Amino acid sequence: MTNKVRVYGKAQNRTALGIMHAYMVMYPQATLADLRKAFPDELAPDNGTKKIFVQADEKSDNNWNGYFVAEDELLTTGDGTKVAVNKMWTKPSFERLISHVSQYGVEIAQFEASEGAGKKGGFRLEYLNGYVPPVVEQKKKGLPMWLWIVLALLAAGIVVALLLPREEKVVEVEKVVEKEVVVRDTVYVQQIEDIESAFNAAQFAVNSAELSDDAKLALHDLAKVLKQNPDLKLRIEGHTSSEGDSVRNQQLSEQRAQAAVSFLVDKEGIDVSRLTAVGMGSTMPVDPENPEANRRTQFEILS
Image (cartoon, rainbow, N blue to C red):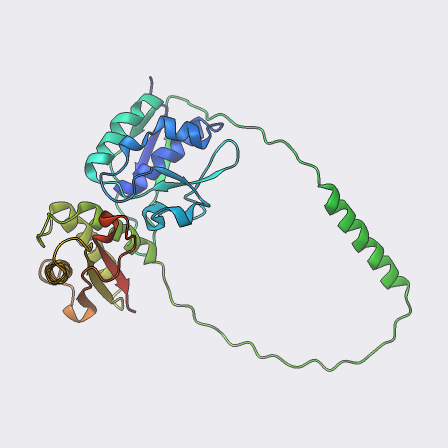
């Protein structure tokens, strides 16, 4: 098949999201069942969330932190269903996805450079070989009967109010002084969430606190955000599952959090006063039924 759409991404998981949006552009009538058939869960990330797609109203039944959930990130299927896409893509699963999606006329470009502080990593699509995406005509819907009745009652009420005699009253209005509210700038929040997902996808080896190459790449991106936001301070929390010895789990969570802080300070030049390493052991599971989800490192914004 001649490629019709090229996907440019700012990061690995954002490129995966762009692939799913490209598929929906090319096949706008596709349903959730069609998506799951086109992208079976065998392609899903190797750890953590196991489903590639979930309905946007299934939050209580899934590890919701593992999906793209912003309104502009959701897919809209041909029957109007809102669908969230998995964002926990490891390198092996991402490579499987790239190989798989070529059959649908989609190709992947090199990752593009970041646009700097305040720019959420994203994706863009390029149509190739003169390809024009299909357009689905939306059926025009008339107003429901109950709404016509409400409008008629409102109109009748307005007429009655205009016909009734009115007594003029002088009402003293309390003066209200509006205070300017300063909202903290949080443009980097999405960046840190994406980096946290990439860091957790890289994973530590069993019973080890040594950073993998993919984990170091994620921390390098985190250092860029910290340098671009000099007032930003973070607490890096290590968490483990409840499996194994609790004392060893506590030590391991502390060592992994400290490994991330040490890399940022020693290799990236971040001031140690801006970072705090905390080990939580297995005391704060996010899903008691899923040990993989509980083995994680969280980047908490302090200021």
